[in-house]
Length: 486
Image (cartoon, rainbow, N blue to C red):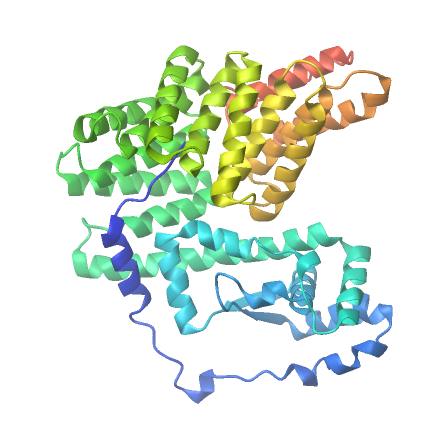
């Protein structure tokens, strides 16, 4: 389900004004501190450090200091996240439960707060690009010793997840504070009716991407209410239509299809009337409604709308545009639900190729398409596509674990998809893989049914995972453990 950001250029202007106002410079010398790390840890003496120093003493020193400060500069490609020493210290701070303080120079903070409104995806990408294996150090021996200590303690992937998780929590707090501060400043100037809609929207997006769907829903509902007040009954108002779509999108994510359908139908009708059947915004609403109808099992209508969107995207944007790729992926899932496996696989491969060319392999849209291809391959008859399905799902799972965290719904669905690829194998030699796959699927279903997700039994992904798990349990002679929520 595609979302949007109301407010347009006006919202971006407000954020730029708010981010640059009301923040005093640090002119008072009592507020400025110098930190001389050579007095704590001389890097000139690390040649002679024994392994115990790297694995124990350094951790103890970080713990006793009690605070770790990291300066993000530049904010969109922070140097500390590219240095082995810095990542090792951040890991030590997280592992020993110390407080993490993130700071930026004033110019970087202003750029960061602009991006909260204008380019939120760039923030998530910058702070999730942690990769110890690609980090650098002034001396190769330091790098080797750090790598050895990490391998023996947690492993590279776990360190990457730890550090990214710490920054994700900071981003939620910092983003919330910055957006609320700017919103309050604009409300004083503009009054309570005309809210800075772009800022409110991005705060909701921030909550949604961190998995706090109830809070995201509340904020999107407030956004819609504010837009309705500002539109004064004008059903062609662009902000109101975007807000209508955004609330519907979070309702769909939470499996509340009957509540979302009238909102999406209204948005499509109004956009067709205001902009025409082939306009970009009209196709967004058309695609969202197509996905909802597919989730509800209305496959003929869903495929007709999805085909309309895909053809419109190809004509307007060409084959190698991310929106075309998303449309191709949505159509491939319609084909999957109608058991047209060969066409479903063809379209999903085409979508993944286009997305990789347009936005790169680690972009969230590209990863979502890759997971859809893995699901289609794992659901197809026979075993010829299972190895590829498992490999693709495992790759997405590792990326989601780092970008979103292990408890995020998208991560849980990726784990279940890898499990689906494993349970499809036959024979005694594959028994262990099948059991592991069923375990992954059960764990995912249990987590998805619990707070904060609480996905209902009719959720499209839950239904598919539950059905596949029951089939696998019957094939292995196990008694199905009951449906989600029973």
